[in-house]
Image (cartoon, rainbow, N blue to C red; front, side, top):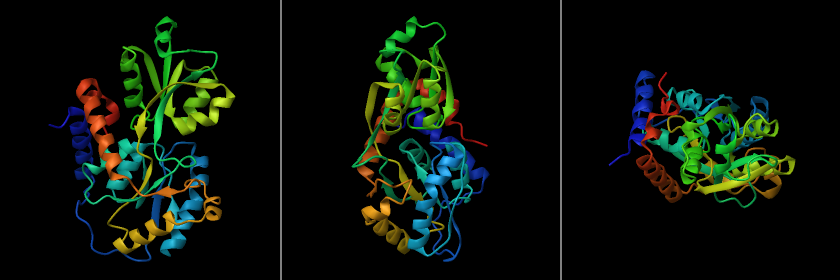
Length: 300
């Protein structure tokens, strides 16, 4: 039986799909010279995201012999809307976004998974605090007016991961003031400015700020890596195979020229994604409050 959490994801995106007139069928052919639009995840500021993504877009353009442009969307909600509307052709998705979109978008084509760190095979969400702040999560009960800082609502390391950390400590996130800062680096910077008591983000982002005064208090379970996903209406099977093969085979010298993807690419692990989906469903079964979150409301 599907959990209400997963069901709500599916229902809300189905409504969006219908409202945008999205077709679930796979188009048999595409215009070979049509410009492809690549939407990277907004894990950093707009300028930083575009700057880091352009070299990968250029590399994909070289491989496919097609123009590839980068389009910035400020949150995951907008990326999902754009995909369903046919406005983007290649997207970078985290695991939670992938399973949400996979429920309603037939024929999603994973290209490759992207390493965010050297030799990475997965990543974790981590609970972090300033070095001079909390030493462990349950100390939050002793703070006057504590504030929890989160990434974007549909982020794997956003509300869902934070609620799991709080539940493990016998606490409930909704009992405390929390707010979405957006990108992972914004959570880190806000904590370093003492604008929050504790935060949640991806481990490979937290590592960049540990030497600056950020401390990891707790690590979550392993998550699948971020992945490149293509729209089957815009990318032919032969192009998909070519892109997969050449991205996986990029030399170390070529990888050094990239921003997104500079640590390399690996084959998309469907088994790992299935295990993650099962974990999300089990978490939702234990905490029905997850199904009521506005973060899952992706309707226009």
